[in-house]
Every structure is written in C-alpha cells, then in structure tokens.
Length: 322
Image (cartoon, rainbow, N blue to C red; front, top):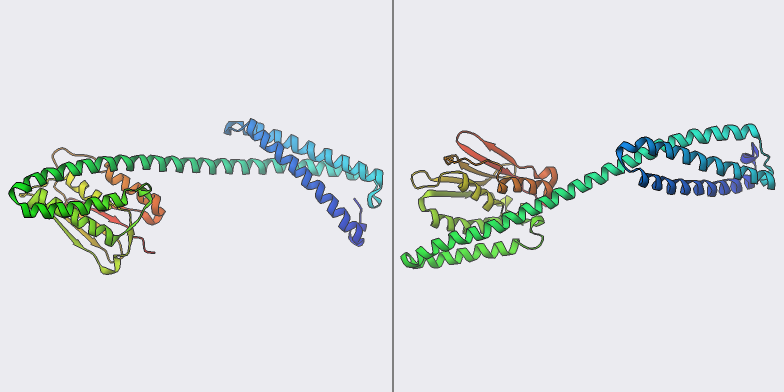
C-alpha cells in the first residue's frame, strides 16, 4: 500500500497497521458468522462439498469486497499518500482468493474435529447413562434377594440357636448399615478404602457361613500397607456372589474363596472352579458392571484382569492410592 514509507515513517506504520488490523478483524468476524450459518444449513458429513464450496465463495467475496472498498476509500482520501495501483490490486485479489481457499479447508478441518469431539462426548454420556442403569438394576436386585436369604436363615436360627441368631442379627445390621452408607445418590462414583470394604465383607462372610455352613470357605490375607487403597464399594460382595452363582456350594464340594493383596499393591480374588451343571456366561451383569465401573472411575488405571484356568477363577483388582 505505502511501499518503503510504511517501514520508514512511524506515523504510517502505526496508523496504517491499526486501521488495517481493525478491518481484518471485521472481515474475520463476518467470515465466522457466515461460517456458522453455512455449517447449520449443511451439518452432515455427506454435505462436506457444499460446506467447503460455500465457505470458499463467501470468504472470497467478503475479503475481496472489503479489500476493494477499503483501497478505493484510501485512494479517495489519500490516506498516508496512498494511490490505487490496479496491478497491485489484481495480485491482492488473487492472494485473497487463495487464502480464502485455504481458510475454507481449515474451517472444514476444525468443523470435523468439533463434530468428532461432540460425538465422543455424547458416546461417553450414553455409556455413563447405560452403566448407571445397570448399576441401579444390580442394586435393586441384590438387596431384596440378600434380605430374603438372611431372613430365611434367621428364622431357623431363632428356634435352633438363639445365641447365634443374636450375633447373626448384629452382623446383618452391620451389613445393611454399610449398604445404606454406600448406596447414596452418587454411589456409582463413590470410593471406599480397602479397610472399610473388608470390615463390611467380614460381616457378610459371617452371614454366608451361617447360610452355607461347611459349603463355603473364605479366607482374607491383606497387607497392612494396602489398607488405605481406594476401591469401588460392594466390589467384593459382587465377586463373592458371582462365585457362588456359578459354582457348586456344598459340604461335599466346598467353595473356597481367597481375598489377598499382591506384591504390586493390587487385590486378588480367587475361587476354585466347580461349575454348576447349568452353565451361565462369565460376563454376568455383576462382573461386567464392575469392569465397566472401574474403567469409568479410573480410566486405564482401573483395568481389571480376569483369569481362568482348569482349577480356578481369578479377578485382579486395582487399588488406587492417593
């Protein structure tokens, strides 16, 4: 526009830069508004050609029109001694058309990325809603079923072993106190320490031992250093119930379950395999829900390992230390 004077005259450099910056921002604002309008009219993936073409046309028109009007006005008022040069104008128009084409391509890249990000967020929200529904289903199934079994066992103990019945009620109250504590409004996102979970599960094991007598043997061996490790509540109960559901539990074939911490600070739950005649898929609602729940709670740190061989079934749980 002003040749070498732009770099040698401070007034031209400051004044011309400021005015042109304002005009560039104006053009950019108009381009953004039209870009959003075009994206709203042609939002689908198969309409990419329409979007890019219209963006290119609109960007070119807006930028060229603003350039021509501005340079004409500069020439009329002689802004900082500017004189319109048709050769310079032609090359400026060609440059702006090329820049508009690049801008249309970049707009499509940005639009595609935002659509992908929106789709990912919607997919994640759908997974969370589905998981919450599964958790609610499991929660509503476990409590009545568990209560029914406990009351059956208690009715027998009251007449045959009143002292044991009294202790049974105490342990049962401990179990339900814990269930009421963790089954709050945001129970799917709560965490508890391994120590708290073990206190609950010992009471739960007592109820199971009364119910199954010699048919079940559950041992706990956990390191003191791991007691503060965080985990999802009711995980151990779900895994124990899963083992009972899929295996024979009888005095002749007792179900053995071990709960222990590993040298790497994880929690291992293992049971011997003596599968029922009527087989059920391993990915039951309880186990699959735990796997999904840990992935959402801890991302990659929450990966659960499931191993099965001819003799045992093992679930390796992460403990999160904060």
